[in-house]
Length: 251
Image 1 (cartoon, rainbow, N blue to C red):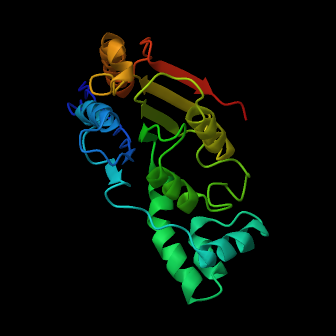
Image 2 (spheres, rainbow, N blue to C red):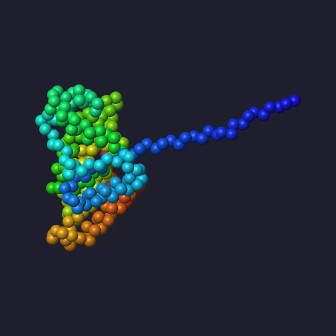
């Protein structure tokens, strides 16, 4: 009797490795200074981030060197019309524009909104100007804050709920009356962002301004702690550096 052995298949099926989704970083600087501490720190974060994730998902804007246009009357009229409607997705805003001026305003706004929606992480370099954010960053904030575009029309949940925001600040003196941090917390909280992290570098002008010059050593320590914090954050670690503050915004 001939017994036929089943033919063996020597080809093993190997499960394909699932490709990791491309991470995206939107990097905004807002300092006019060429020797900016906030730019130095955000550059360190971005370099570390690209070493980990690559450069494909990286997007950079210097809103001081390349200013975002200030909003005008046509932008405001379009905004008021959107406020009176259910959430309008990005693709539907152009249809709401009533005239050519509003269409131009939306054309200037759309790339900025699209970048923000696409970002897994938003990195802001923010020098403290008169206790709060500098004018170039405020212009960006005013421009991108379009009613409804960050809300999912189907669920009414924020489209930015999983976005991480890292704010790197630099101030010439020490923290006293600070309206920058509470302002940005309130702003991003209003957009539905739950994860906002602050890294502060203080006394950055101590080496060259008479009054805080005696605090130069403290300024050096603060900058070193800030450098450590941005590197650890970019590497995905939970930094314990003294310059880092993590704010969880409850929905």
